[in-house]
Length: 171
Image (cartoon, rainbow, N blue to C red; front, side, top):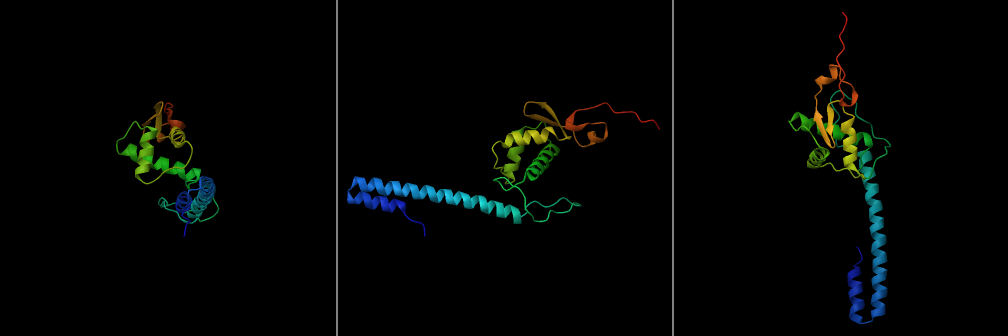
């Protein structure tokens, strides 16, 4: 059972000795800080173990599923490839439901609705980078991406959503 630091400080206060109150309170604060640090370490380890053994996302049809093995994950338990895949899936899903142009915030809100939160310093920057490199989207301006669809990819579209003129085929 966890220690009750407040009870110990309260007892010292009841005794009326301010020096003892300071000593007991300082000791309690040190012990609490140590416990918080230990718990944070355990949280990170449990997340890593969960990410190693639990694969919540179903593999797309026709693709091999990843076998459990060592992976470098962030504090959120996702690898960078998994994060990018989740962003791609959410962005295309939103666009196909008619949400275009998209903003980074739209994609992050959609992911949050699905229970996905990225535990990285700048999730918005990561989402913007993924969208900028997707052929299905064209950057319209700062934080705005227009869905150009998948059919554009076969009609002379180039990477990063930029258009090239279609080449005539000699037949």
